[in-house]
Length: 362
Image (spheres, rainbow, N blue to C red):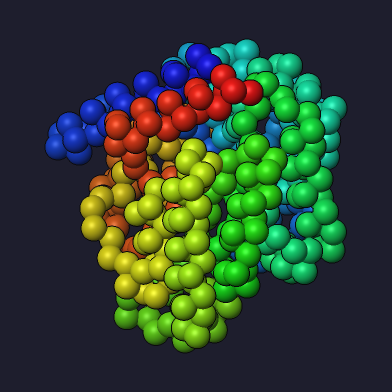
């Protein structure tokens, strides 16, 4: 509970200092979280994933040193993903345990591989944290096709069932589908799987990570030709129906759907190519991303430097990242990625209350 409170407090304080950082042109905040893409190695071949380009894993001692630096600096949240981190379960568990001992709120994403009762109980014992299981459909046909792996649905479903049966006190589970042209009619079904297991639910809109093709002047047909997972025009009515159903479930089952109503409605405009990016991208003041080779990056703006060669705090305050922050403030690319979603203090307090209520009930 202390780590969750620490993260929320840091986020609120970060919100207060952001305007001053932008006005002075000097970063006065520390990151709210660090995303470590620990490995590109994975047993799946998901078409929406770019991490598989790295066929390597960040060395254990480098990750441990990074955690020590983050703890000393006071960064509250440590997210680690892949690839599939649970392919290296024992080493991964040692990393999570060390981060928890150092006071970081840990979070990781998995396709469900090796996510069994033994691992879950041990993760809870060493402090636990937050887990996201990817589940793109409520049927084997859809999820297996989306993840390009025969048996992916059973693996993810077993992970969710394991959580339901184990009821680990120190672990919160989130079920998250990537919304694409292939699974529009199954969001409500995935929500029900999450609800019945006592998990949270969040939708991530498909992002092709392609700056050039997402410019407004690029026709929808061209986007679909290059990125067939993008929602087709004939499926726009089904897209609206799917989003409306989740908005209704958000009202009837409060505290489960993490997406805000605004975020959900923006998904319709996003796929219809009508979403205008009004405001500034502030990710450069909240997060930093570490690749499997140790290099740090910010969205699609290129390399900042390597944590194998420089301390993380030095990279955060580097002139190169400061230049990137200024570029990101002017970014007009329609984006619905979770890292770019900013919440008000009221929203944080509301979500914190819901989280506390779930923990007390559990």
